Amino acid sequence: MHSCPKHIKHLVVKPGGKVKLDRIDPREVDFLGKEDKARAQLAEDIVEIDRLQDRLYAEGKRSLLVVLQGTDTAGKDGTIRGVFNQTGPLGVSVTAFKKPSEDELARDYLWRVHHAAPRRGTIGIFNRSHYEDVLIARVRKFAPKEAIEARYDQINAFEKLLVDNGTIILKFMLHISKKEQAERLQERLDDKTKHWKFNAGDLEDRLLWGEFQKAYELALGRCSTEHAPWHIVPADRKWARNCIVAAVVRDTLENMDPHYPKVPWKASDFEIP
Amino acid sequence: MHSCPKHIKHLVVKPGGKVKLDRIDPREVDFLGKEDKARAQLAEDIVEIDRLQDRLYAEGKRSLLVVLQGTDTAGKDGTIRGVFNQTGPLGVSVTAFKKPSEDELARDYLWRVHHAAPRRGTIGIFNRSHYEDVLIARVRKFAPKEAIEARYDQINAFEKLLVDNGTIILKFMLHISKKEQAERLQERLDDKTKHWKFNAGDLEDRLLWGEFQKAYELALGRCSTEHAPWHIVPADRKWARNCIVAAVVRDTLENMDPHYPKVPWKASDFEIP
Image 1 (cartoon, helix red, strand yellow):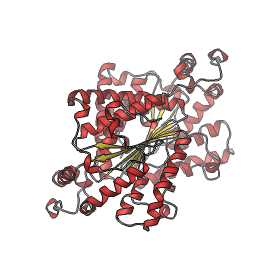
Image 2 (image 1 turned 90 degrees about the vertical axis):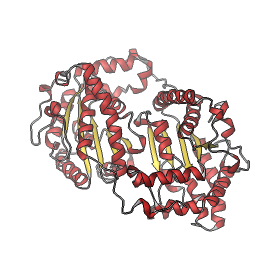
Image 3 (image 1 turned 90 degrees about the horizontal axis):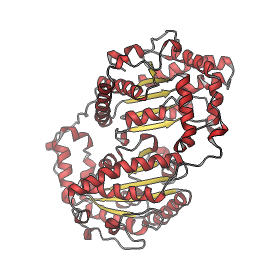
Image 4 (image 1 turned 120 degrees about the horizontal axis):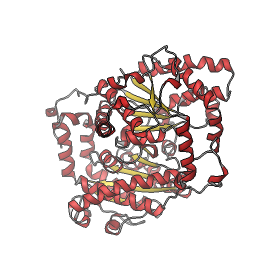
């Protein structure tokens, strides 16, 4: 049901495929054409997403789940702002998954994720997601290796459940280079209005860059499925990142083709008292 | 902490005051000045609300709760779209209160409302609210009279709890005329893309127009407090309604004056590895 415009089809991870992130250039944007044209297209896509979302909401039968993943500073917040800032807030909900609470840790790792599933008629956006449970959890060994190994299949089954019940799932890995991350972290240090975004823990994660990339490769390879594909988004350039995500979201919504629902009555059945 | 531009101060219900809705003309818009100027101001307010919301989010200490009430077709959805459509979805959440579920009915009526309190750093919008429990609940006698009577004080105490803990509360009653409602209901019958919004139950409620207005008068009078004031918004004209709500929200956010937080470190403490 998800769909993707031709010029960015190559960013979809083939189910069962092996992923090598270093073969994908985070600065590669040629396939988007000229920047000013791409930006104009983005502006149009944003408006169209809002229009389609309104029909999705009226229809009230299906939902769209957009999963955003990426290392620190990859631009998850920026993507939400850049792509969905003009989408009616009635029909969009963002869930930011942070360190699980005690209450959440007292259940299986998908418990809180299931709870955040988007209502029918809406677009749900996950800012980080259950994939952290095979990413940081793997790198930092938050669970025994066998438990982590079992999670990929569990995640595929969980996503299938959502899809079978009317949710379309799109997953985006915002792929930035290590150099770009250094620049963005430095920017957070240099710009006082960005200090609140700086987290010393991000520097520790950076030392494990290679291990995180490997964990991503595993997750993308094992969990890109026909029913819930992963997209690798070259994200060093913010405008390109937004263009790609917006294009896929728009295309998918157009493909879903939501309709204002038919009602079981005629207007003439009623008279306003 | 809430605040309101001078030219619309007269729309704030005085605490302890008696409310007579028929003294307020739902079409009165002269105090907004010329329409084109007011619309330009609205466009500016919308952008400013987004900017201020970003600072509120960065600060992460306080929240803003916007309560929208009004009879059917009063324009609650339209206000959300008209005022908050350009506010970053990261920091806005809308809760639409519908018929309570069995699970919710198994608790007191404020239980589900408390659960929906906005996170620190965000704007929460209630599309309908706990006021339904003294509005439709009163008119339709969903609870014994004494139980309903006790709720006004309970609501004031509940809202005080939120305010004392860092939430600013703004409440708006979208005030439309009975004639305007007839036109809007007819429009929902005539326009196929609006059929899904038409609910035969709205016609039954319309027959009780007078009783609903009386229930509103009671609720507005008893629950407009210093800490959580009610505003009566002349709402027959959609642009005027949006102008009023946006102006109060912007003014309140400016008054809250959220700041990017100071951090307990200097940029030079860190080096990017």
